[in-house]
Length: 104
Image (cartoon, rainbow, N blue to C red):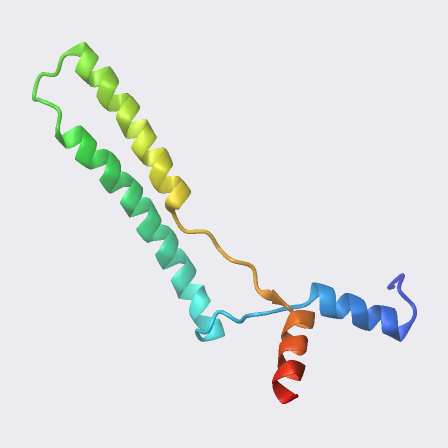
């Protein structure tokens, strides 16, 4: 049972906590697009590391290996920071305010 008893409190909580998708695409499209975006981000991480490691000679020196390893870790970290991040949906209260502002 809800601890909030008055209707105005319930409405205020609803406007604050409920969220709506305002991304612009079909709401059902997120089901496929989010995994696709994650996949692309992971591919970019692997590609960045692979390009650095392709530059190594066939029989590299120990110093070259350590330098390449450090550069690969840095490149992977940079790509991960630039990678895909989900954005939260917009609170219902903000959407209602926008719609009311458009009417005026």
